[in-house]
Length: 485
Image 1 (cartoon, rainbow, N blue to C red):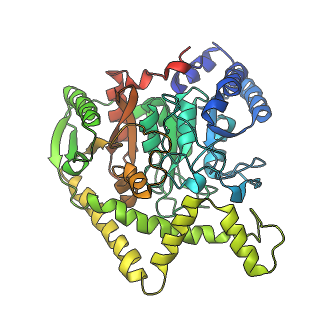
Image 2: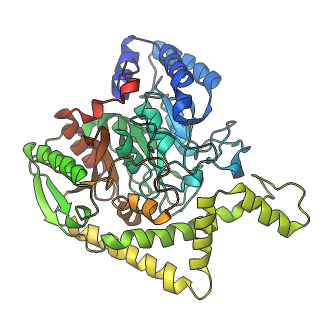
Image 3: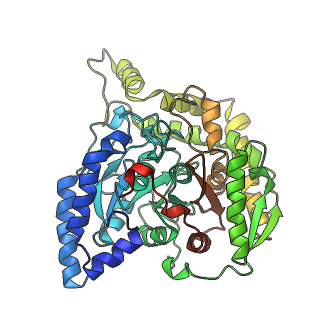
């Protein structure tokens, strides 16, 4: 049953092939046996999960079960969960127990999902390798000597290793798509505003977006339908109808125009990764799609623009952690200034402090116009490039990452090299557009991802393209050798 996709588990639970309690117990047993080696979870909520599974079985027996009833999932530890530690993988929030549920948590619970626990992540979602966590790095189930990507690396590793049916993640500059690609699963970043950010601890408020991580496009369609929708508690939430994503999966691709931006197939792309992506594009052509060469000329500016905008917003958002109201507090401060300084210097890790310093600098008097304002103008140019391209094409396709998973520690002491691992994902965040990653091959036994980018609120089309591709390929069905049952 653990080898089934979420979609298959939904059907099996309704057919009575196994119970929600049996499914939950099986995942908890696997987490206990194998989860520690990957360090994918920060908190496992076993007792609560079993109680929720029993309630799910009762709902299934009564015939009034919502769509995801009995499906065991995990939440990235950036989502507030009532009565459960919500740490953001930081010493700063190590003892913080949230007094309410994030909207994403609330909606998935209302859909019947069972929470197994909270997954590891880069501290405050700042990182591309899941090596900045206060609780130690997450390891890639395909090769434990390599990173799973970040910041949603714990969620990605948990799904890939069969430690949950699916998981939630957040994507600020690629933090769902990049780890999905590096661990051989599927990950979707919705349009900015499509999924509520209420109760999702902020990194960069104009970029952060929650989304699903699962084994297939069909799985993501079910999850997104439960997660999406307007939330009056989130001022950035968009009041747009939520379509039936699952119903759109089987539309034919005949006549679909897929744009191929030259800037995403540049010299920085590993040749073997490029070959795998081009092979995937060939499959889409055989399904009736038309490939169109396009240009996104300002894409090379996305990394420098992002690393001005995101740290600036992080600096503002993380100012609240001062050792006074909640979170880590330094012992025996001599005065208020000492309390502030030591609480923040001891509570935050090196990468978080680096971004706070950069963000504070670019927002400071005399530098705001030169850096932050200019980066926002570049951001508009990047979005305009996409809008112009969508006059000619329906979907844009590209690699998700420039290379497969790299070795632990390989880029930890070179921030620029680390930042460049997100070079193909950042532009979609700056433009606020939906984008997803699906497995499309392997390089030396490591997964490779195909990225699809769509128009605003066109997640249904992206899921449709991904699903049709997965109907004729089997990359999404491949599992790390140690997890095969």
